[in-house]
Image (cartoon, rainbow, N blue to C red; front, side, top):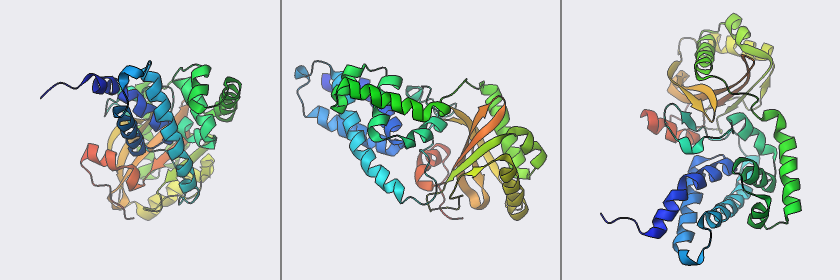
Length: 300
């Protein structure tokens, strides 16, 4: 097999970063890969010798493609059945996709849904990808002052969701396992010891499988919820397939009643669970199913 040509080598060197940028913009790994592929097609049609800074060119192209797709995606989400969550990305220990390593957790990705597409782009490019405001302004076709305001507004909107400190891996896995066991058994005493008083649960079934359409707030409501689920479905059981880290949060992959594939991610602050993110939409779990060789079943 002949070695790749220099143009292809340049693109492949940037591909992981471009895919990460597109994923952070869109919240969908499948759409991010489509955007990256379109960026490759556009790159293949230009003369690299005329591109002074390939990395900057590719970043601008990927950002603009993602912005166009994000605008249509936001319209689709307005008619989405139930809560919409970003596609769960297994960051460790299962997949080893180190190119996605940054301080953006699933909770922050969810909070970024409140931002306008331009606010999201400005925040990601400057605060996460360390691109100067002048270059961000060129990418977004705005002046630098406007871009600074976009990034500043974004920070204010999502400040509460920024991670305050990292959870140690062993502690994160311990709490994830404890949460699974307590939820499975309907042990409200153990659950109460794990949950913060103001805990919030969000679940995404996409209208394909059963999920809670609205967020559930407060430990008392979650305790009643899990006690009720145990009374109704205890004979069907749940099975933890493996503990994982999902976009920087400890969690696990499980098979729930009816052998429905599910991911659960937990935001932990001061040793208590403050957010629970459950993804059950089989369209968002195809890559998880492939990892496990489990078909993403779509009935409940």
